[in-house]
Image (tube, rainbow, N blue to C red; front, side, top):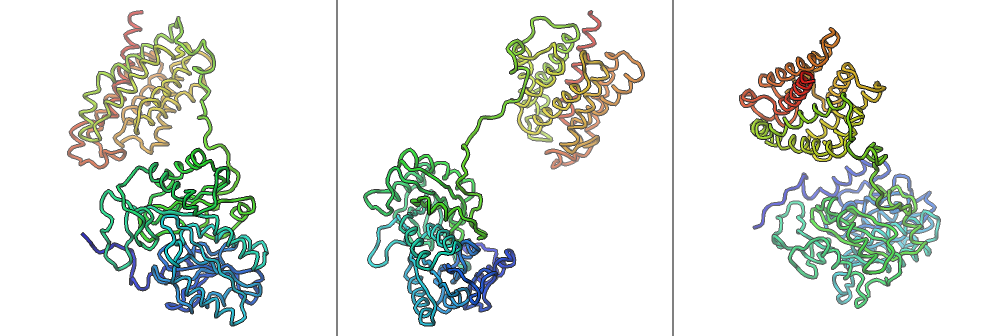
Length: 593
């Protein structure tokens, strides 16, 4: 079923001129000739025909292929781009105006995609310019490998034309003569092959969207103006698509490009207008090893992005170009053209390197990679506290999930369960319990390994900050005040990076009152264990008080106040529960010993 295409435009007939106006406002290095609507020419702002002493390189064609061609105007690439209406060749007068505007005594080269209208209009403009005394040469690019040449039409010009622009522009900027620039451009055009694959047909401004290409279908070799391709097929994985396209381009039977095993090439993955960068990068990642392993080619450069599009067409084209050192130097030469991928050059480090491994005591020496055989009294207390806290979270899984199903995504209990289970398992095997500070660090490592989402990173931050505080102050056995300082530092880190504080309906509403009371009681001289137990009651009270708080962080911010008032914050309850379980376990151990 056809429907009117959606476009962010004004008058469909003015879209090209308005595009040019926006382009030159965005990029001060560009100008346009004041001849709208008939003359639509974008040119370098630093070039005047009366003073320019280099060969001018001019290209163009129908609009709708942006950034081509105007996006490639700039020092080291095109001197001017002649813009036609959407998918329509520019008129002779417009081309001629562009030649007159930028061509100096060294002449100009016209680079033209192989379409009948472009050949005729640029050709007639060239002849007229020659009659006026200008030196003009023309190179026609036909890099399409999807369809065999038909009659006198030949192969269509596609994204490979961009490589020809770059080679010619770099040669011109290097001071080469018109003859030399033309020769380099023509040679480059003979080394390049392109094939496209479309997932949808483009929609022209003001026109109805075509349903020619149905659901689950793709078209091989679809032209950049929406003209039919070689075949319509069922949509295939990108691996299959890339393999087919490369085989077509490099087929020795058709011999579209003179590329043989052992040659050096560059690769372009070009989006057709509506293809996400992610998908283009996937295609690039599959194309490179296939070129190397299956076709025996050395891939020297990879250019991935949208260079020559077809309005809002979904799909991509793949271009392969045979290169030598001379062509590579032209491709690597500097340019100020806005759409050329400046980050691509020959300095290619290894594609992947090993993941850095933190300097953990579990990895430093074998004797610390297993649980100690004997524990000091202080460290046994730590073990009891950890086990009680983790066991409490395991037992609370269902209750936490139930609360979270009302105010979150229903997985708080399951997330805590994974973290607690990992802690218990790792403690039995790996934790260096006789080193309290390092054990705190490893708790964070266990959490990071298995706990996903926001809870995982918050608890990882909590324990890493506590570790940093203990490491900076502790010289041996950790004192109760050092534990209290570590808790305070951990809370501060979570607040800093998470943005929450007291009253935001988060786990901090349990930990902040616990930390404050713990500091108060220790400073008052209370027994540390008694202070720990009293602070755990403050944690529970703080967690329960979240029922009366509006949510200011996390998914709960989207929940109505009535629902929030029915349950406490699950994260706060989880924190209060493990804190209290740990305190009671330490108190029980004290009483029994």
